[in-house]
Image (cartoon, rainbow over all chains, first blue to last red; front, side, top):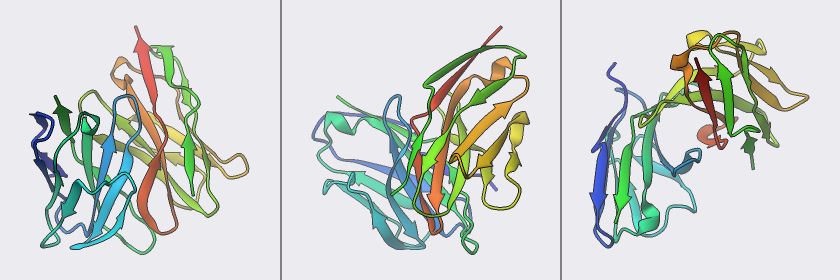
Length: 115
Length: 113
């Protein structure tokens, strides 16, 4: 069990550019979550997948954000036309749902800085 | 809707002293409760969780927490802290359906020698 991995760990981009982040969940975990954490705050939910289906999206996820999990394994989060307000840590978590009990395990995060 | 309040943004404490980090939640349904720790520039690591059963939950690194339904609290405690416990601690809640976690604003524990 290698844990949740995220790539890249850091990304610096200029305003207006597109960026894409990748998350590899723990093997056989069927749920995958994306959260955003701004400096000094707790993480905020963005979206989640059950296998390849995207089941819920937060109002924080504007039209410039899109997430995919094409084969029910890894996931990508793309931000188009980045803005300075997108600067944050983007966290991925995965879980194996067993009945109603679920524990999410987090990756190390991707820190995005938009200049 | 559910929410989590961590009453202290920072808690300074001397090494080997006891510590309590406070967490209160609000929810209209039954909840599951979690404490995560975040070291600088890292992701979140699960410390402990309450899903059901005994209200006193023991976690890693000597931490424990007690679920109090009447007070809607889930305070985290450690009888003797170490310098290495210096980190940000987040309380989180999820509802019966699992899925999204709602986090508190975090408490920065600063252990001084």
